[in-house]
Amino acid sequence: MQNEALATIAVLGGTGKEGGGLALRWAHKGHKVIIGSRTAERAQEAADAMNATLGGGSVVGAANPDAAAQADIIVLAVPYAAQQSTVKDVADALAGKILIDVTVPLVPPKVSRVQLPDGGSAVEAVQKMLGEGVRVVSAFQNISAHHLTKLDEEIECDVLVCADDSEAADQVVALAQEIGLRAWNAGPLCNSVVAEGLTSVLIALNRRYKVPGSGIRITGV
Amino acid sequence: MQNEALATIAVLGGTGKEGGGLALRWAHKGHKVIIGSRTAERAQEAADAMNATLGGGSVVGAANPDAAAQADIIVLAVPYAAQQSTVKDVADALAGKILIDVTVPLVPPKVSRVQLPDGGSAVEAVQKMLGEGVRVVSAFQNISAHHLTKLDEEIECDVLVCADDSEAADQVVALAQEIGLRAWNAGPLCNSVVAEGLTSVLIALNRRYKVPGSGIRITGV
Image (cartoon, rainbow over all chains, first blue to last red):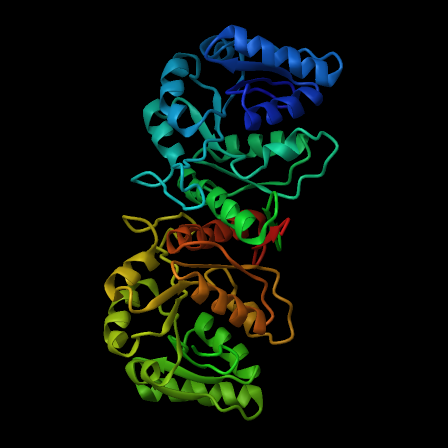
């Protein structure tokens, strides 16, 4: 089993804000991070920018399938519309690995309304596509990208981590804790409905109460 | 429009723990509270016990339809299996009023798994049954009954309030604040998916981390 403290992490969609923020924080903590994108060129540009921010990091870029093939842990941080096609593109490289799905099934323009896919959460469809040979874990949907990129900032939002493989969930909890996040093993993958829907609730709260980035804390634990 | 500060509140299922806890707190704050149950006798017993706890309250009991008819605001706090039949029993008494639905669609025995009804939240089915003439509001799903009954205890869990009628949601936010709860207008009724599912997530956290009553706080607001 991989020790997550030494794992190589590929962030598919690492050119985007959320994936980029997570990649930056893991690279900052010494992980080997591979930015994945549809083209290797865009991925390398994002990696170069990240290394500049870090003052000499070792982040590299690759096309999504190559990034997934070279990593121990793969993070899926693409827009909802690209979720399933990206998973198909990299499926061959995922066997036996952990896939962390960050996808929030927002349906523009009404992003402050919870509009989950038929049958529940978006991540369950991914687990079904991939079968039991891939350990799919849902996490990080509620963390503001804005806060992630400020490396010294304490992030006032907990991470709900859901997976049918509870040990995989615990590994992702540890990966979240490494980058300064409070995280919880929140049960089976079907419980991801709450994390996926919560993003729309937080957007609704941001608009209603005119704040930039509401979040949640778990209490009593 | 009713001033919620003076409203008479009927709590259907007020003989249960969650409804009883809410009823006790509102009665303690001076509201006229009517406990509703399937039989007037059981309701009156619960009301008498509540008055004894309060040291002379004015809580009364009635069969559910009578309780609903006499109240300005009706709280639905029955088990999920009785949700729709109870609504049918009292529907005639709800026109123009606020119905606060506290129902959590737990599916025993796996109550730590989110298992929402087809089509989304349980409360949306109630709004559809009743039509637009009743202002249905979802709230209080995540508040531990155990904490509610300890009148002096600060409850470390926020209330997510969802309704298609945003002004009705604001009234329920105020009713929650009256009894010492932090509460938020969390958007349209479909967003109740999160509050309803969150109860199973909190049960999962209670089991996993061996705590009696986890909750959530909204941050950054």
